[in-house]
Length: 252
Length: 252
DNA sequence: CGAGTGTTTGATAATGTTCAAGAAGCGTGG
DNA sequence: CCACGCTTCTTGAACATTATCAAACACTCG
Image (cartoon, rainbow over all chains, first blue to last red; front, side, top):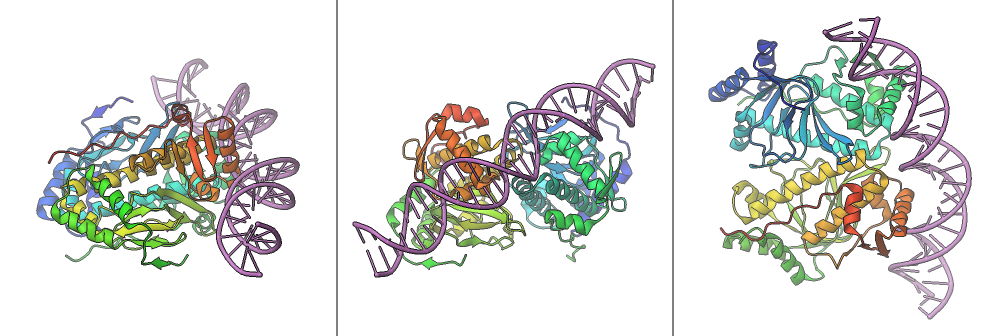
């Protein structure tokens, strides 16, 4: 779990565009913000899968914007069992908290190679209490918190089958929100063990439940690509509430 | 689930003392704060078990301080299954959030008759970013968030036995923190169904797991009173980390 | 091709649920 | 004080779900 830093990036320009589009849905940035965002993006970094981005207990002094790849927030029990608390997808921010001097409540680990940018301007915006970046940060945090509640309900009161479907729909709508779907498909860029540790299941059972969904023609999968075939039926199965749409750019 | 309001209170003075002691652990209040707290406490209300204090989706515009009784934060699935997300104990605050215009992410329901006071000064303090009340509010929110992560780990990766023990220890240390223990004992003032809905178990299994703990002489119970007999052993069973002590009054 | 990792399969066991019924506790009204 | 009705707790038996173990298979990469 050591950090491998690469100073080169695969594809700078697309990721810059990706990041810019994220924020502008909440309105225009100020020129100063624009500069800070661009400076931050210019310093983006890529690390390999397994890198620990935040250690549980560490001070959260600088938020990171995930640009590419997936990460998880997790806790590990003393006997080695792992529970993944939430997934971090491209466009999500890590280590952003309203409280100053807040401390990470679980560790954050890259499950693929990930590219991210350190974005102090998001922490500033959160404290400024106004502007597009503020609204974006606010919503990002609220969404993460809502995700935690969803996770509690999944784990506490849903069957393996329901949990899996709910988690897949969560991925689907989050990726759609940042325009990373390909049709109704997306990649799960990690092993079934990761998924199992998020759903509180054994890998064997996760595997069998996935097979059941395939047999029932509710999903298709080719390698890591998942295709959700019958969204209304899937949502019904697990009592999933699709998130309301992100508001279009507001006039300032 | 209708709200029954009583304008009379059982025991005003002890509850005022209880509330005052809560805050002073974080330093002296300003005279203005003191007045606001006292005004709020003078207007405390009591409602019966079953009253919904916050509805999921409602605007969180005024925090409530729970003075007596227990409440839960819960979500209900469309088929009626309920998951309790967290417990609210005396001394906890409800509906306090750093974000302005935040919305309740689950509903809050009294599981006993509860007495609470509406405390706008806590929301003010949180925005003021300094002072004893600010530090108290900050910590209250951080503690609640930590509790959510604990809940995810319990539900996702612990057995029924471990979950139950972990939850009991959580109650123990939280009640100890507000000086509501009687020796090593405390009351669980609700049915086993409530406990089951928090732990993600059937009531039958919760019942049997409690019996097992009694047989193993790890707990004793008389009615709703629970006595934890072997704290170190209990903590070991469920990998429980006792919270660090609340800091003693700070010099300003 | 061979090693390593991840996925799939089968058999078996453990864990937890459901259903149904009886016992115990508790408040209410006679 | 007792009888009644209600809720909660407890018990047993059958069942369902999920975990564990072990092995086979598949895929990727050097």
